[in-house]
Image 1 (cartoon, rainbow, N blue to C red):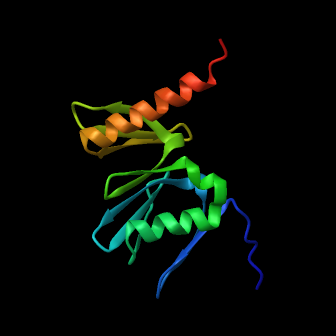
Image 2: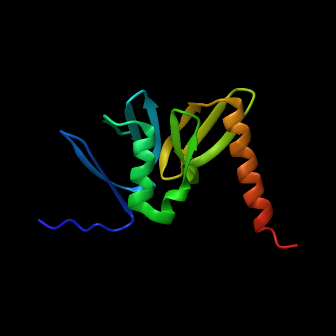
Image 3: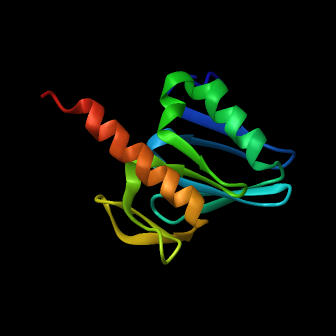
Length: 131
């Protein structure tokens, strides 16, 4: 059977499971040691027996430039930047939200990681302004 392999899909597999998902359906990926959990915008979760660095490489290899929407935050988190709703540095809290699905995902990250993320977004906004 032929499966179309285009750049909009990420295909992840380990010994027992294969998951094919569009990149825009991925909300975030969290890591616990050598395991990674991919959380989709509808709340479904898929656990894989490889670490976050391996996950990052898979995204880059399969998505090319589109992988730039995924941002690594510290040692245990990769987020899909299109879903950033709010960054609260003092609370060490990042909220991801998707307009097509009710609810939000509240994630914890270090102050430094959140400061860097906030600065990156502000810098991108400044470079888009035409003065």
